[in-house]
Structure formats: structure tokens, C-alpha cells
Image (cartoon, rainbow, N blue to C red; front, side, top):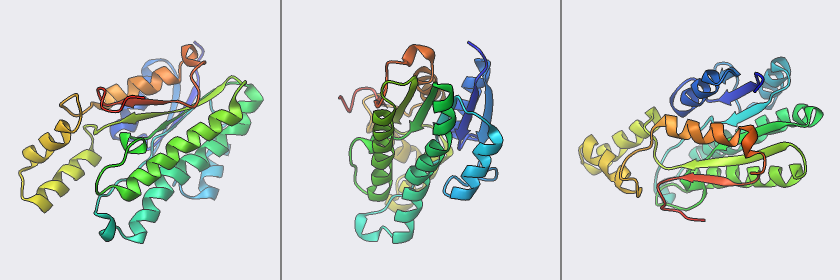
Length: 231
């Protein structure tokens, strides 16, 4: 397979870094984009970045943020931040690459969402809403692209061993009095896997959806949770 230009937002650590490394290992040219390179919520910055990058073969919308709180204590600022990064960021980046993909009549768009984009959970109103929006975006884009050689899909992992999950573990421990080990075990127990996912597992799913062999898969969500959510 010829070298492709792959852009991974939120690509400098955690899941994004694992995704970038996976594509690099496959011989692709990868732009792993952190917030310092491009704020995905800034329309002008996104447009400028993708104009300088050139035609993109694979876009991975991975940039994301997460906080948790009961709905009554969820601030408007937290609501806006999660929607802007997790949903609006994916929208702006997807919009920025579409014209180039249509001109080439090929391309893959994969958004890293979450099981929270398919099912609700306590204390995640803003996060769940933003990830549902990201999944809905991919479905709408897929409908527009139907019949072309461009696809748009999402992967929906459960808790992954990343700095973001580590922050969640620390928050749970601080607010419940549990040890961090017990807090992590509680997160792991929420999945039929009985463990946290590894970033490389998410990267493998993204790489599959971006492969030529996945050309018939469009508008779908690939759930990575060991069978808890079945569709």
C-alpha cells in the first residue's frame, strides 16, 4: 500500500500516540497533532493547519477531554469545553479534509469516541453528550459520502490505560476515600473484560477501519468493551 498522509489529532500521548505509532509502523506519513500545533476548537487554526498539511488520506479525530460530576454540579463551562473539543473539534477537522478527499475520491475518517457515545452512565452528562454527538457526526458524514470511496466511522472504547483514565482514578479516590488501586479496579470491573484496555488495542481498531479492506464499512461504531454493549 502506498504511503498515505495520516493526521491524528491529540496524537502526542495516550491513545493518539499509539495510533500514530501504528500508522508509522505501517509505512504511512503521520502528523501527530497536539494542542500546541493546532487547537481543534479554533476554526481559523484548523483551516490553516489542514491547508498547510495538504491532501489528507486518513483523518483520526482523537483529541478529547473528559471531566465527571453529577448533573446538578456540572458547570456550563465544563459542558461547553467537552462539547467543543470532543464534538466541534471533530466537526471542524472533518470538514477541513472533505474537499481534498472528494477530489482524490478516497479517504478514511475515524473518530475516537467512547462507550459513553453509545450508552449513558452516571456523572458523565457533558462527556456522554459530546461523544454521542461525535458518533452522530460520523453517521451523518457517512450518509453524505455513501457511494464514494471515502468512509467515516467511530471506535468506542471503554476505559483505556491513559493519563486521562489515571486522572479519573485519582478523582474517584479523592472523592470516595478509596485507594487508587481500588478505584482502578472499579473502572475495570465496569467492563466484561475485567481490565482496562491498552492504547494499542484502540490503535489496532482504528488502523483496521482505515485500511483498504474496510472500504465497505461506513457509518459504523466499533465498540471495544468485551461485549457489554451489543448492537
